[in-house]
Image (cartoon, rainbow, N blue to C red; front, side, top):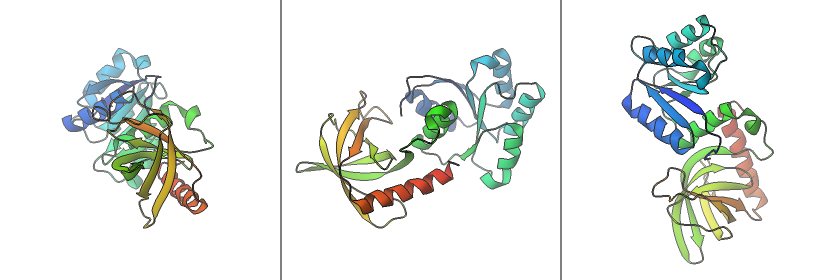
Length: 244
């Protein structure tokens, strides 16, 4: 989830809360972030060096010049395609504005009800299309609790993403590669408890107490076929939400 290939991102939002939230998430994910408070300020930033921008996270509701106005300015000044634009909204319904945004050159729209995992997933999918193109084992962002046991000791962490073959487990506990876990969780929309064994393949260097993404990559070992199928169907439905 944390990239070593840093990209230059501008976060444009008139809400200090969301500017800070997005900046913190994407900085921790490995990117270089600049923040602006509105459309006019964003246009000035673009004029300084349009080639120094990889993606703009653009709030649609801003005073003076809103997100639509910024997109129109980008088009009118021959800058369409110079960088990516992902629109973010706390007001508009996706279905009512997505077509207009597409015509103006935005590459997607997501609501402000995003989780850290969702925003990193969407941004990295746009920035690294070759890595995101139809992987053999697609992984989707998700956030819900999972109980895990090591021997007789049981703890609770959070599942941050999942594929048919494994998951990323966010936890404050230190999990060393090679550690065997017994995992229990319920996928959203399913009333069935999945009991599955996994082995730690890698762990982040950052402590889970200090990091939004601290934890370990878990590979499932000999999952039951019915559990695999349930996970596969869940992933397929989640991917539809992201247009995959």
